[in-house]
Length: 504
Figure 1: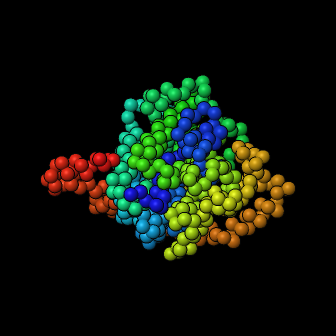
Figure 2 (figure 1 turned 135 degrees about the vertical axis):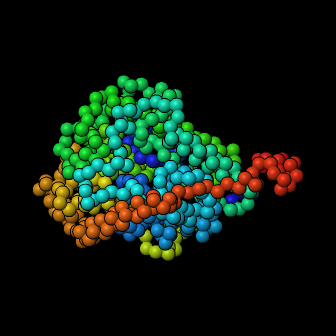
């Protein structure tokens, strides 16, 4: 018996900028399955991460809270078990909840409300990858470097290809196991892949989908606009300021990135086919998104960690044709809105009863009533300097601010590539002043800097002690070999009959 409530499958890609998807206007990339999701679903044209880095963005998505509310400073800070997540809320609502793939949890809690987790994480779960604002000009030995750009290209296997293959295989198996149960319990499955995150590598067949001469170059090349201090700091941190990249090298990195997107697209198709075979396609909401984007050579920058559009924007497609008519949403929304959206989708549009305040706002009104909020708040406390960075987007205007650095203010409707900083333009002085005052009134930047520095210093000490003690939190998936495949728990014909799907 199929569940009367919708199943939910949340599919995440890592470091995928929507600018490189055809459903968002890219002319070269091939991703027919994601295109189909977009054609049949609701596409959010201005969706953002709230903090353009892997772990903070995911903590925000799962909790519905902004980074300052849950101390989500960087990629090596603990995600507290005390913070309720959408996995907790959906479990409480009677859903089976499962994670297959990456979520970059740091700390001893590697579940955060998921009752099942099928893989270990691709990244370490300890305190090692913390920034050091005490020495902002030093390069960190664990940080990004330009080798992943200069050595981009095709490969036979890579660590990330192996990881994504495993995550997808186990997610498909989970879907079939839910179908075999035949009960009325809905499931919420998160499938989170690491591609197209650097290193920029892809299989040869995906590389061959693209010709070098067809690969587009950055719209805003290095040197074409004045560089802001945060960008200068980031480029220094990963060594981009010490290397001149020719067009062939840039194209190779982008070509491999495009190939990775096509590989992700194949995997999404595989999952959709599994839902179809399991008889669950018509009653499953599919959400396709990412944690942040990738500059991919724009302004001479790579990776993420900034609030420029290529870094801060994310794809967001909600595919539920039986519930919502296909449309495109222009309003600005963000990952912090995912928790209340999932909760409302799981309980027929009714607002959630939350254990704590949340900053996220449901996206259901955007999909059903043609309305909803048009605002994104961004907070960043990681690499690229020694002070917090804040962002506000309302309507088509976006401001980026950090104490001690000039503000950046862009009119995205008329300047989508952000080449014209209007922060010093007299015509926009009132708007800029109001937004900067709002940020100053909302945040005590000096106190926040002190809090973040204290956290970094604690972790710098603890990580060395933990390493010496051999203490780690890396998740070990639970597999019950005693009850796998054919065992003497019941007659073999009964085991074989039970495992067959569909039943005869």
